[in-house]
Length: 437
Image (cartoon, rainbow, N blue to C red; front, side):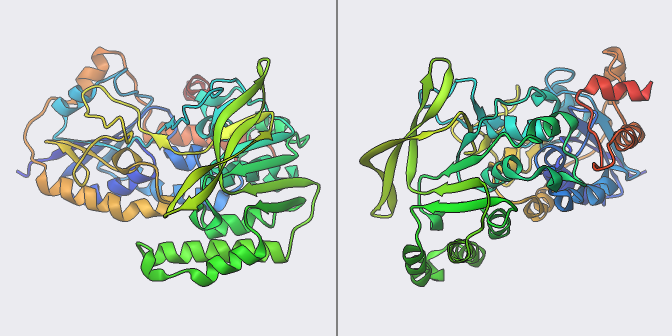
């Protein structure tokens, strides 16, 4: 008789489900997928902007893995609240953590605790109807975004889009009501270095430079300087050919936008070469961001003597994320990850995705790495008799949400959507569970 290997997979975002894709192919393996919410798919559901339904369509492929015969979804279970990592390790031959990175990295500068200063996870969670971030942000006519990566690009695009551009999206009723009157008229995206060092990808940059009704300005990057930087690019100086192509594409997109400027009443400003020093308050309200100008010096961008204040009434830090510490799991506080060697944290304990390496790479980039971690786990994991998890869950009166129940919740979200939306997400787990009654 073949021994069945039992694996606990914590998280149901793309990195976790790419690992599941490989794990489930082993016929002697049973995988239980633990998810905090009754809603699976993690970053696809709550990180991808609502107007990017093409990207969200990857959910259909990921769903195949959760529906497999040797896979069981256990939704509505929070690790270290309902069950501990140590207990999972007693009931499974291996535990794979794929919980992503949910905590905003902070700047640690004065004024960051003002109510008008949010992290990007709070803003993205709001416009994606995340149950933890239902409270609307204090939007203002002028907004400052700290950071120049795709997260900042997404935030700027959602804040500046015409209301009609959300047709066919899953933007919820509450953010729709707040965004419909177009409360944001100007967004300044602040970056510490120059245009060649910005982290956004070229398709996202080209898209936002052509938004209807939005004119785009670049401060710290004119046509001559961009052309000179393009001419000086040397592929040999880049770690990969893909990185060289990304930087070249970004510079070409900026140059095209400078040569063929967009027009509109709303304004997006890319401000290069500035470092935030302080969020300036006017009483209890945010008045602006005091910044230092920076300049390249021996390969690094350093502060100059020049300072200025960027006026704004709402600010969002878009500078990265950290995994949440978990009891019973080693934690690298400096990097915000679970320290590991190629995904292996300890005997029978593994990690994948952002909690393994930090927040980097697009969704599809996770697949190769996730498969490699899954293969290494399968090569090491053993088998043998272990106590069934259902006894522990029953003793604690924990009733997980399974795959068929999620499908019922999903159908309800689609039914309650307005004609110009593809779904209306539930704003709480309790509201979703009412459907199952």
